[in-house]
Length: 573
Image (cartoon, rainbow, N blue to C red; front, side, top):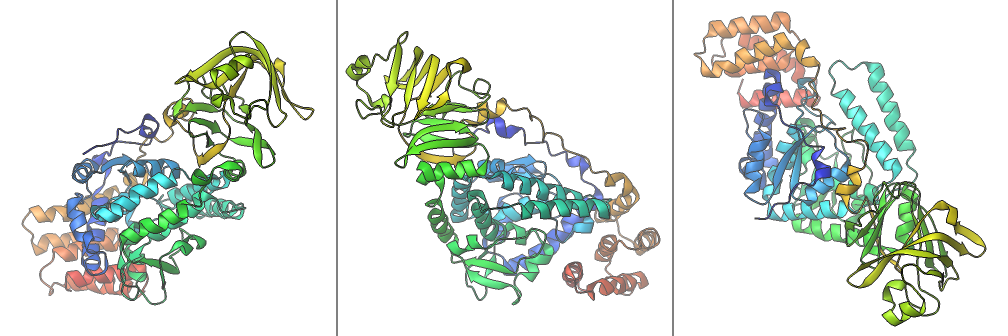
């Protein structure tokens, strides 16, 4: 099988999974989640789920090692890498398009056992990985990643992403204050309020939410779960099948429905099968700028105010933040970027034309030369000779649009005998008495092309583009949560109970552990559940006390209560 080499610009998001950082509480949390998930999803998830867990190396009694998951995924054409929490959407989708599953090393706290908005190993390993074992679904993920990585993301989208990431991180921080959480919630609401339009990236994000994250499949009356958000949410995984959650047939209309990551979803979409996902995805792609191109695509890039790429005549690419353009009779005359810009030929950066060289932006005329009604790259050798286009000559080029470029040619760049770039000195560009470029501004590099055939989000040649950025290493550190010291005594107790599997269990030992848990950690239900699980004799007084305590939690009928009920049912107390 062919496996993609991980691009350099994506490697900065990869961290080592330091398995020693997982505490005994983490392991108990994972074990409980998987215990009740296996029983529930065996009945209510897509049939590939159980086989998929095994095929992708998801261990049940302990947190899986991502290296092991990677070895299993390789068997059917995928890879896995370890990342730290939220990574930018574009990076995640690029990983996915390369058949690489990014898995957050983080483990949710036991206080947030039923659900966490922050990516963690429960969500991305136990949620995403198992369904990849289905070939049709795997194909959808790859196609989605390829298309989503071309979607134009707005600056408003990026602000929303950072607000969501900050809120998720603070909510997963055990000692976060109410003020800290409130401030992040206000920032998130502000980011939502600042969304002035729905970008391509937002539309793709909605499709991802209603399929990959919260998708149902099969019969609309009795659908099965396949979305990772549901497979990893102990609470919503159960709640989603209730009648109060609307079940709608999956189609392109799903992109009309927004979502709130902090709330359970009021409706879900049911696809006929995984092949149908690809069909609807392709319908959406036909509306995107990377296929439409032209002025409409350029308008989308300008509106976004983020780095985008325009492709000219299927050979040349310009990547930057596009600021404005001039058109005449609905044809482009001149384009301009306002940020560091990269020039490429057939998706590879042109030597010397990187973001450092074009640091202040880039501009170029476009269109056909008036005399021959052809763009420069289409002129014959005799026509080039008559126009005196050669190094060392001073010329005046009149475009069909009446735009004039005058200056001395100091360099001509060709590919396969075709001119793609002309560099001028002492250059002046005039259009209808408007000066677009002055000779005092330095050399002018003019791309030779006629029309834009594609516009898409992000830079063209990503590796050299991102190497020039100043934010290298931003995601490299894997942080050790501060709560681990705080929970040191509780961790010791969890470890003692966990080790009972390897030692002779006596009621005296169990009673001693129970009394320690009851006296020192009266509000910790999970440690009590583990003690009860190790108990075989229902007649023990402390076993009944645990059942009574857990029953009080169950009677609250919230997500945690329902999860405990499922756990209690499995040990038949």
